[in-house]
Image (tube, rainbow, N blue to C red; front, side):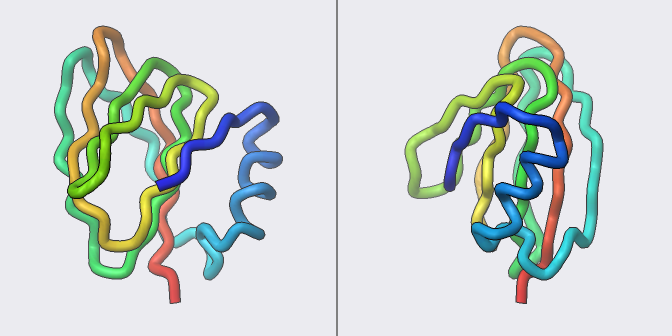
Amino acid sequence: MILSPATGSATAILQRMLPSGVLHSGCDDAQHWQLCEAERFRLTPEPGTETALIVLEGDITLALEETDPVRAHAGQVVLIPPDARGELRTAERRVRLLGLTSRGG
């Protein structure tokens, strides 16, 4: 998992992600999520998928199996490797995320 600051526009963020191999075969799915305070969301991706979560508002903690939890706040991008499983937790305020998924290949 990579955590990187998102200091530019959404276009600039995607331009940095594409050359690094994330979403290298194109974006297969895009979702806008709004999560409540202190919510837990179990991550159960389809086999072979990789995901980029762009935190638009609030703070999250991402705890993947066999890794230490990582915190991210608005303006940061979390890259979730293929087949990773774990849990996403929100802090004490509402969270908005943009999730971009690719099946790789």
